[in-house]
Length: 311
Image 1 (cartoon, helix red, strand yellow):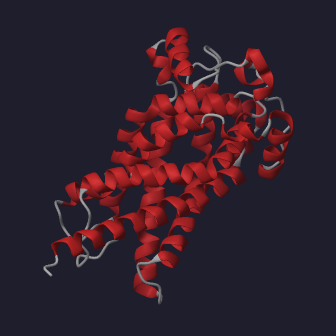
Image 2 (cartoon, one colour):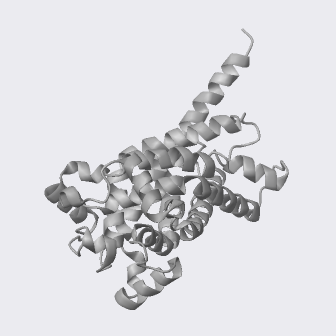
Image 3 (tube, helix red, strand yellow):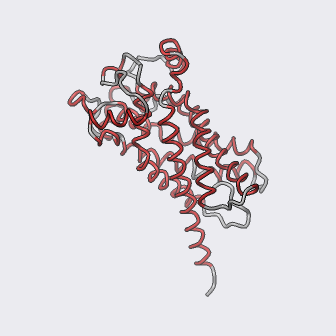
């Protein structure tokens, strides 16, 4: 993906687009329980509204405690609640924000081999905003499913993915499917810039200054480092986004009102609720996604070179 040397033959934008979505779905399958635990911890403490009325009163402690409690009270399947919407999200979301990153970066640099930090940041912001505009409804449905408890039985808000899309559109209007777009764009601009640019920079530094080459150990280290940096920077916006997207109609007048309410009622540390599952999830997701993505591209590049090499 990022950081390929000029001598390498890069895959086409279409291959990157499809490869990024596929790799992201594979990563989601491995890390989705951590994401669900993160959502439960982030909405914990609201004390009223939709979250409270659906069984998410304060009862989770830490990432593994949350997972254990969910399995004990709701069954193991609850850890994958919202997975269908999650995979739909990754195929549309990651394909754009990661798969088009190199193309947008080349557009801003006009194809120059010299890529400055400004061009990388601009490309990250652009693809992040494009991805949110396209995939926001899938994110809303995913968060709603992850937030509701399976023990609610017939009182559950949603019983199926397509039903959730229809119910939200019917009860809250089409705008309901794009609830939280503002904070989500802000979050993903931050995430995309931090994640992709940090991965880009760490990878370049490792290749230039250490014995590591552009291979698996380098990709693993770069992805894990990018996951930690992203979690630290993006966690406050991520918590607000989750709270706002999961809120009942009228609970918060805006994302800013949601943030102010959190500080007033729970203190500034509320912005880092679910930090550990966020880091474990994002770190492991980055490792699986980037390593898979890099290997997919290497395989495609090798196949192309073999195909074009005369016998």
